[in-house]
Structure formats: C-alpha cells, structure tokens
Length: 314
Image (cartoon, helix red, strand yellow):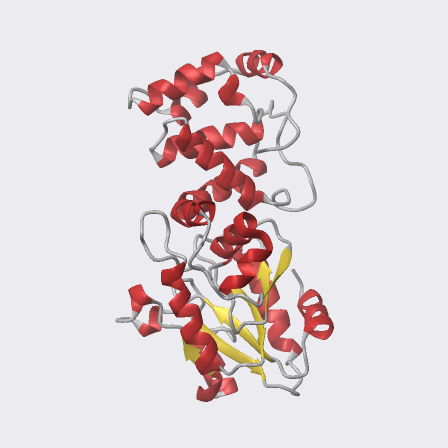
C-alpha cells in the first residue's frame, strides 16, 4: 500500500458526514518518538482526537489497548502526511507478528461511539474455544471477511467503511451492512479466530521460505506480491485441513501446510504422506524434521509426479 492508495480511497469513498479514523494496535511495536506513536499523535492532534478501545481482556492495561485516532472531522481535509506514514508502516508491518496499523475507518459517528463498539465486538466474535477475539487486527478481520464475505459488514455497526491492509500486500474495503446482528456468526468464522495465531505463524514461515526456497519447489509463489492473493484464506483452509487430518502440534500443522504450498497442494492424498501424518498425529514423528532430513529432491519429485493436477493452494 502507498499513501496515494489510501488517499485515493478517501477521495472516492468518503461521505461528506464522515470522520476519518486510524486504528492502531497497542500490542504492536511503534517507537515512542515515531510520528504515529500514540504519544506523538496526542501531541500533534490533541487529547480529544485519540481514545483507547478498551478490549475486554486488557481493560486493566489501557496503554496496551488499541488506539482510535481521529485524523479528520466531517468537512476537514485529511492530512496526507499521516496517510503516507500509516500506509508505509502498514507495508512494513507484514514482517511482524503483531501489526500496528489495523486500518482506516470512515464513519459519521464520533470516537465515543466507535471505540466501545469495536471493544464489544471482541466478545461477539469469540473463537470456537470461547476466547475473545481481537477481531480488529488485520489478519483476524481478513479471515472474517474470507469466511463471511459481505456478511462481515454486520460486525462494523457504526463504522460505515473499513479500509483493511491485507496479508499479501493488497487491501480491501469492508462495508457496513444494514444488519448489525453478529449473533449468528458462522462456525467457519469462529474457527478462523481460534486458528488465527497459528495461521499468522504459517504466513510468516511461508514468506520466509519464499526468500530461500528449496531448489525443487514447483508450487512456490513467484508473483509480484509477497504472497499470493487470498493468502490468509489459503492459510485458514490449509491449517484447518491439517487439523482435520489429526495434527494438533502447531509445528506439524505449519510444516504440512508449508510443503503443500511449495511442493503440491494435494500432498495429503499421497499414501506416503498419509502415513507420516498418522505418525505425527500419534506423536511419533516431527514432520518438519522428517521432511528436512529424510526427503531428498528425488523423493519429492517422485511424490509430486504421483499426485493429480491441482488448481490452487487450497
């Protein structure tokens, strides 16, 4: 993303009554003296322009909670300086476990309406294991959008439009829908929130592997973006499939998923790989170590040749 990209969205999609907000993650790193740090934003924009989103699990530590920053009121121009800084930061964010820039929000409602709504939705988007979900984090909202499509707009409520940076360097616009009922969150969506931490680690491993891929890796991504389009959705499907095959250890989940995006998406269909999955599920084998130490290029070529043609990563 670039500042020009964000400015283009502002110019094209902002309504006359909209405030423009920036949402940043209090758990992510941002140097104290950086212009986008919360203290810096308070100094430059004023106390009244910044409020904390008191997520339920961090109410005791407000400084670690997300901050909602009003960049412009209705009728006010958005300072391009902040759009450029935040877009650049979002592009660098992809390499970090916790991403600082959560998105740019447009709404006719003030800070004291938006912030409590975002905090309350952490409970209504609870994962399958009942843990609250910081659904506003970029990967989590991307997963909700991947599993719910336009119905994800039900989560936004008073946020009319959310410009979301994606895991593969692109962006999408999530629009609020007329219905704000999230009580019927699909099971897939809740499962995506439960699996978000391991999906996040998988995407990091995938990006790293593409910097120095094996010599034989027929399915490695070679496009212009850091990861393929819909990388997070692929990650969800691959990790969920690995769990359904019996794997539970995150190292095994990531290893199988990684080799599927490097060697062949249909790896679990091969009897040799099925046997290894069964052993790993029983705790008798570490998939990553076994693949690294026991599978030569010739071995992988033979397995890939035995598999049917695939159309995509998941």
